[in-house]
Image (cartoon, rainbow, N blue to C red; front, top):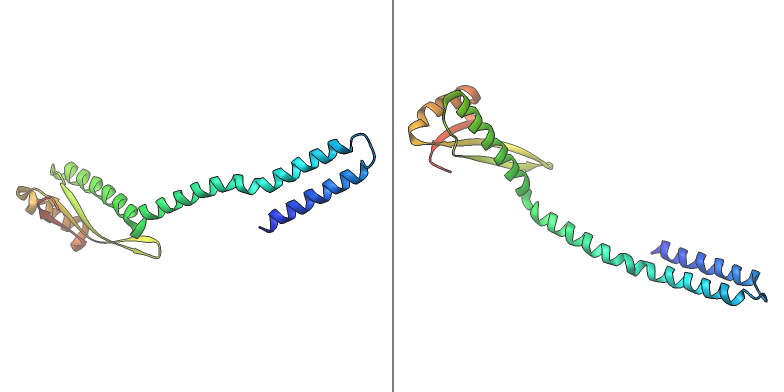
Amino acid sequence: MRAFFLSVLLASLAGALSVSLAGGSAYEKYIKYIVSLLLILVLIAPFASLKTIDYEFEAQETLSEAADGGAVYEQQIHEELLRYFDALLQNDLGINARDVRIDIGIQDGEAVVGDITVYVDEADLTEAGAYLFAKFGSGVTASAGGG
């Protein structure tokens, strides 16, 4: 707001100086016309920028709704861990991971991963459970079903 008043003041001073220097000449009315146009443009400029402010506000509001409660981070972590465990079990045992359940918390703006449950078919449960326990310990377990 201060910048707006400063720009109006400077444009007015420059206009007054220009008109006073051209006082009595044949170009005085043209200089007054140009100074008037300049002042009108300075006065209208803030209203032209309001259009972009509205769009920026809407974009920020939409982004904050999408990221509410860390849902975006949780979804990304879920997808990455599902791909990881599916590739790991598929490569080492030939077992497909059907889904992954992850206990995730957001702490100081960072995701903290708790217990992980990898869902596999009932027939592969014992083998996958023993493999995951041997590889990761008790933080990663196998369960039958699809989460």
